[in-house]
Amino acid sequence: MAEPGTPPVDLAAVAWPRPTERLLLRRVTPADAEAVWELRHHPSSHEWLTSGPPDRATYVAEFDRPERLDHLLVVERDGVLVADLMLRITDAWAQAEVAERGLAVQAELGWVVHPEHTGRGYATEAAAEMLRICFEDLGLRRVTAACFAENTASWRIMERLGMRRETHAVADALHRSGRWLDSYADAILAEEWRAARG
Image (cartoon, rainbow, N blue to C red; front, side, top):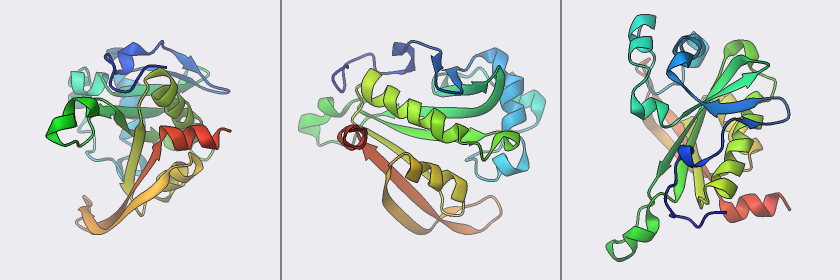
């Protein structure tokens, strides 16, 4: 296991693809643009995304931007894309004297499941593998996830992963419907994850 903050701490430092019991996790490529569009443009997926994908042609044309390819993974079951995962490695907030020790030590995890493949535990299985990669392969110290409080499926995944609710913010997030909604933020530390695994 790498020491926290030891470069390189990014997804390129991990050997891909990664199999789980039922799934295959791999880095996204420009060739995945159409499949990811199909996943993300459904109303039930779009409902909770930070930004909804524009029309198909625009989405596919802009798909290979580094900010997407550097942080996105796809999840396959028998060669079919069933979900995607976002893992954004970040620095911790730190006081100036110790700021260097807080570089690239934590990550934010997110997921989108194709509506035709929900309710089968795929997101939980894939995200559990991502936690293992974060803590064992990348040597991170903390992983967070956030969602609208009304996104029950998402916060239930966070609970199944053993994440701890750190924030319930009231009416802090503006939904594209125009409604101000509550949000949840959960996290898990490397030592909590290891303790839960026995």
